[in-house]
Length: 203
Image 1 (tube, rainbow, N blue to C red):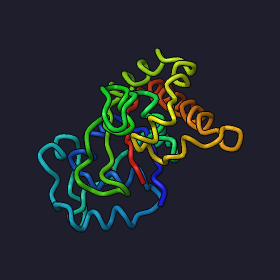
Image 2 (cartoon, helix red, strand yellow):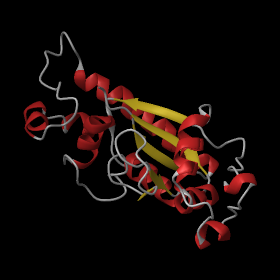
Image 3 (cartoon, rainbow, N blue to C red):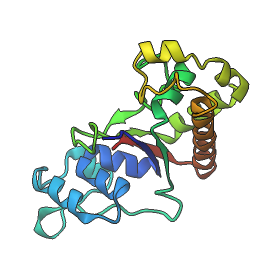
């Protein structure tokens, strides 16, 4: 089964709400599918935490917290498909480590509770963290990222999906990564322009 990484923009206020009331994360990553949220809500506390109440979560009918109130420019989504781990390697030259803000795809932000949204919990990054990542990535050229592509090392490090030694004439895996680097750059730019943070998740 494939592991794909998604990113969704969210305001800092709503990030605070999902961190204090994790089932709400399903309204961010699956807004058109009520079932995951309803299932997560069944096992969640019926009363929001103190932090949740501070940031506006209130019990609704039946004890469930009120839904998120979203601005028009929230929930802008993108998908890095299976390129996410290779991009992380190009950004940090590590498999799972790296320093903020360039480790945003695999280790940035805060876990949204313990709710498994596919491959573990989602993570939330504030607008400041997203801006920091945008600025840091902006200082690295595409040519520099291409120079970091090291198929043998990536295979040794088990960089998912472990396709990096394929013949470029038949499968341009570096080109694949760079296409999604462009998508990541655009997502970060747009999120910064709107002053938004983001939720990152693997599914």
